Image (cartoon, rainbow, N blue to C red; front, side, top):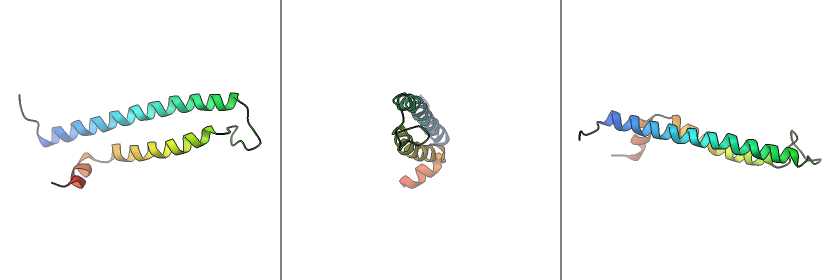
Length: 86
């Protein structure tokens, strides 16, 4: 078995992070779509924003987590390796 060189290792790590982000984004879209449907079907109160009573809070805070995951996934793999040290 041959040894992997550093560029192959970085490429593998980058592919892993991008795939992981893709899974996260897909789950975010499907789950939040279901939550919006439930919230709209349940009826809107006087405090509703865009017809939503509570689903926007989930979208907002989970969306912030998704954005931070995107920043991590799309930053270069060398930045991650340099921050870890030798």
